Image (tube, rainbow, N blue to C red; front, side, top):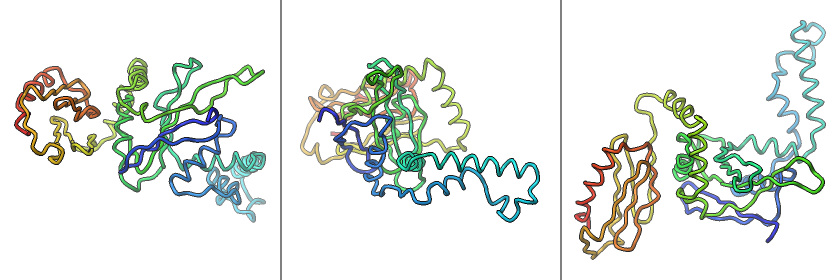
Length: 308
């Protein structure tokens, strides 16, 4: 198991699971990992037959000048034909594995939640999801992106989280990367790497820029708000309110007083505990609460014993 690593699969409507990949993966043989992700999605490995021609057709619109028109093509068209020939020659030099990897990665969107550095304490964390508008929205993946300082993402179906680290191969002067363990414990939104990623985006100004671009692209009333459901509770929110509804089953027959209930609000999250049992700790708000709102919400928590 020394050469393998863990990654995490996050379905849209099932429990997250930790997956073990049994061999080492570096940037030189990443196709094996991408094939595993495609298999998780129920997709077969891509056949390379015809891939070169398909990629060529996507890169250049060869239909502008047909084979029988080459003799009468004007100067601009001749330049386009020459560029097409150069692209064709370049694609012929790409081996089948590289071609399959290139085509496979075009079916995924990749979000770099944290970029890697040569400092081993700062590994790269990447989220892979299908480039599709079909299937259920993956709210948990959206919440993870929010925790890392990203604006809401349109993530649908199953997604995957993997981590990389830089290393030096023997006699090499430049580092390459390899995949390393990313576990369910790392998916906790209170994990240090989430805080580091968010702080880095804040300090660089990237978060403010992308948030502004996201808001400017929204239609009136079109801002999606994070929401979720678990075995204990369901929650949703608007720009003004957060509503948490606890499912009654686990609390049947429980009598609680105010002293038994702890409710804590921070600028970005909500925490609820009943006696020794934590009921709610991973709710990430869609926006930051103002200090006055936090004080108001805290005062309202005194009446929560009435729900039991």
